[in-house]
Length: 186
Image 1 (tube, rainbow, N blue to C red):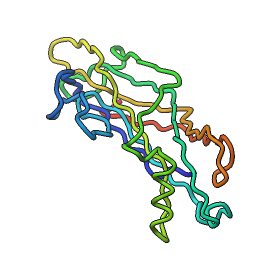
Image 2 (cartoon, one colour; image 1 turned 180 degrees about the horizontal axis):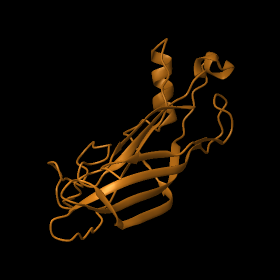
Image 3 (cartoon, rainbow, N blue to C red; image 1 turned 90 degrees about the vertical axis):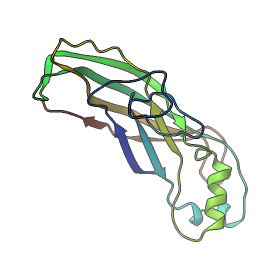
């Protein structure tokens, strides 16, 4: 398994609307929303499984099921920017969560669904897709300054398949590096 893409939404200015399902400050997910919202921010993480069609069990037509899961340690940095858009480090604070479980993008984490893609096409690699949409955070700034999410660090990202698999191997897990994304000026 390799990383296909990592995309983050780091709102600047940070003006989340915890009641909104639509618009530029929305925080809530609507039906079939599987990505971070522009108001609260978050990230999406897509993977690819390579070599699946080369596995003997795949070539023998073995059908399997099971779900992939993903966790990560997440640190979000918030604070205020001045009227010139420069981040004031003295206002910075972190919101941390360890082992945060990521949401699955639709059925993309369902092994039988992905296996169906592999069987119906002769080229291309597919993999489970995950996302995190954050809850709103209270950021209080002095008059003339603007609340911002200044940074996002995603570490210890791990994707696991906790089922017996003749194609993937038993109870596999894949670890990925640290992803850091920032907004604004330092």
